[in-house]
Length: 260
Ligand code: COA
Image (cartoon, rainbow, N blue to C red):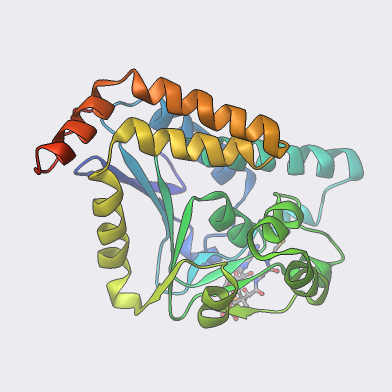
């Protein structure tokens, strides 16, 4: 599959998607969002892909937002559709049952912050800048920012960031739970690789079930969410991977999980 605005690279079961419009700081135009959707569908159906990394081309930006030149021309009906389209793509990304890491290598503003939040884990380079500056444009976030930010960092902190539209440094993002890890820019790939190595050494079905339990359960009441957890716990118990994991522990050896 070839794209105009994305670069795709595969290594060791890890697919790296690079948003590739560096001259526009990787701003998400409609064409890029559509390509991202196709890339996500491809990942879901490709057994050779075990994990995903999303990053931005160049040294300055992860993604500097939705493309403001396209936004500026939208009427109300189109604007709603624009938001729904982007939200659906980010939700499909979030609901992947393969781990997705955002390697945030610079500006992650507006749609860039929203894209990073739809990923499962965020690793930020020390020069990363997060924020939802839409209010400065007379807009609100439209790709899930008003919903994922409070879920991630709490309502009070999220409202302050959303209402001021201010920038959030990598260190602050780490402190409030918006970033999981901060590292030097030159170490970003290595740090992301280290996290994925740890994740991919675990039972693949269990990793997928954790993602499913959190992603679906967070939107349910506690009782239904716990029922979902118990059901997935039960499904896992039917797997050879669970037999291998528990057997390996009891035999004091490392488990060898088969993916199929
Ligand atoms: N949409 C469209 N184009 C964008 C963009 C966006 N969100 N963000 C950056 N660009 C473009 C600029 O227009 C410029 O293009 P040009 O060279 O053709 O004029 C190019 O990317 C470089 O950006 P520039 O503003 O010159 O870089 P900078 O280093 O001076 O500033 C930012 C960097 C991120 C602070 C600034 O680009 C910015 O504020 N971007 C918008 C952020 C935003 O509001 N995002 C939310 C959108 S909903």
